[in-house]
Image (cartoon, rainbow, N blue to C red; front, side):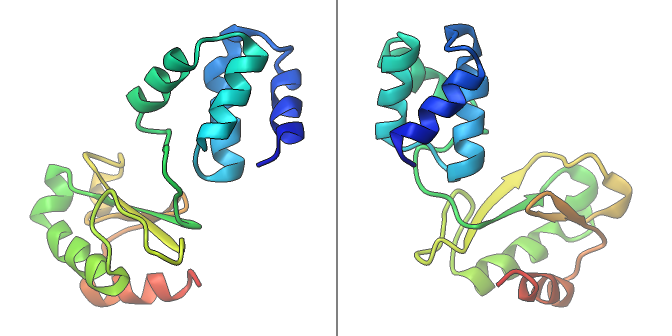
Length: 150
């Protein structure tokens, strides 16, 4: 992401330090992660110490300081999903993608995370890909869903 685009995002928020989290969210949304160069530019433009920005970027799980895949997979491991086979769904995703929770594949195609609850317990086990919820998942259904994300 180039400095001109970062500056546009900052200008949209009137260059106010109070909009730091929103600025970071927008950069993350467009870039899929927060490169150090982007954080340095935000620090310079908003006049917020880089250490403060890094603290915020590491505190909130929504932010990533490493590249993320084009498709983000979230597997619900909450109680309702767990008792209905979420571990088998997770195992299948790991086998198909070659990554574990918290990792991104080398092609930057998929990132995998587990979550405590996605809020749709009646549909368990649930897998979310790029914000789209897939319920009542099975290992074979998991493979079918992932085929749609090339």
